[in-house]
Image (cartoon, rainbow, N blue to C red; front, top):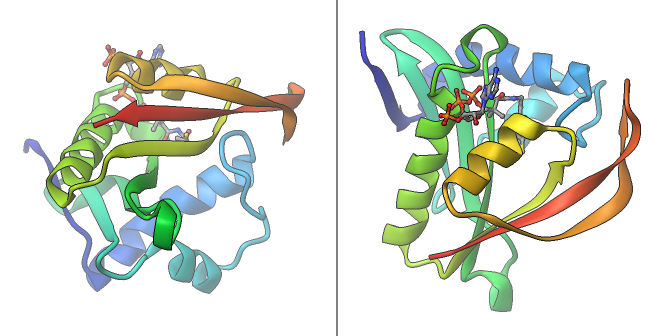
Length: 163
Ligand SMILES: CC(C)(COP(=O)(O)OP(=O)(O)OC[C@H]1O[C@@H](n2cnc3c(N)ncnc32)[C@H](O)[C@@H]1OP(=O)(O)O)[C@@H](O)C(=O)NCCC(=O)NCCS
């Protein structure tokens, strides 16, 4: 079955939660509390409209998820941001690319001027390569801002795409 990106419904949460749980407990790519409970994760990830949550699905199987929203309120609300996660088993097969392409399309049609990723872990080379291949540039790196379980303190990139 082909990969589809669609708005997430309440029924999708059981498919989304294991993906978030793995990423958060790995502690390699997101500065989230590894002890985050399921209900905290649900509250944080399932952002309310006009923000948006999607899943990448193959039939009933959720392979990845993304959320997207205004990066800041008020005078900062013309810049979008977002987060994405792909199931460990499904990585390296284009799911992440499909989610970022969808995020960019959403930000464009919603009228955002740019997309800013606030904290891309320097050692997350697949994510950095993916974003760069879609036109994102790195504005700067907060040195040593992320405690990686294997690499120690590594930088966090601010990445930017003008729309
Ligand atoms: C980063 C992440 C979202 C990428 O999703 P993915 O589905 O694995 O990525 P894709 O298969 O779409 O690959 C996109 C690009 O990443 C790179 N890439 C992905 N997997 C790779 C691998 N195993 N080896 C080398 N490059 C790889 C390639 O440059 C690829 O480009 P291509 O499409 O030209 O081949 C995914 O690995 C993930 O969820 N990681 C954990 C959470 C995370 O890091 N989220 C992003 C935080 S900023």
